Structures are given as C-alpha cells and as structure tokens.
Image 1: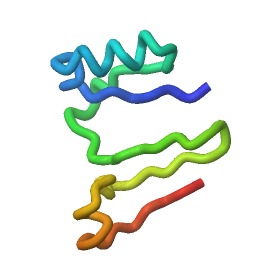
Image 2: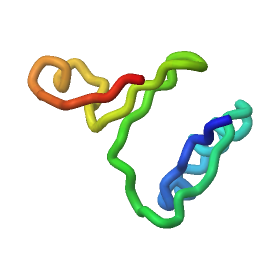
Image 3: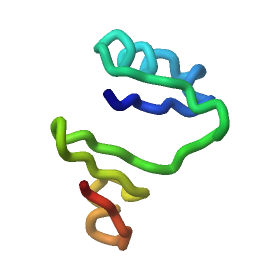
Image 4: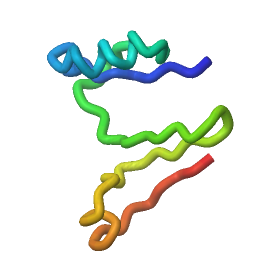
Length: 70
C-alpha cells in the first residue's frame, strides 16, 4: 500500500494531516525534505497524476507544465 508523504512543515498544518490520518490514508513524515513542490491526484487504485501543475483555472489557461500520469 502506498503512503502519502507529508512535508516536515505539515506538523504546523495539523488539521490537514489529522484529516488524512483520521480518514485512513496511510501517511508518513518526509523529514529529509522541508518542502515538496509536487501536486498529486490519486484517481483510483491504478492511476495517479503528479507534477508541479497547480490545479487552478489560471494555471490551466496560462502555464505550461510537464506532467506524468501513470
């Protein structure tokens, strides 16, 4: 089972981390890196999308990003 890595700074955002943990999402703290710029969408048990693209209308219309979907 995959885990959702949380940034070191996530401990300050405990409500989001608590929501993930309390919802049964396997999580771990990534203590080696202060910030991860990736955005991730888990679609189902077989598909995830990751990259630096912001999921906003402005980013969709004005930015070019390279994304990976597997």
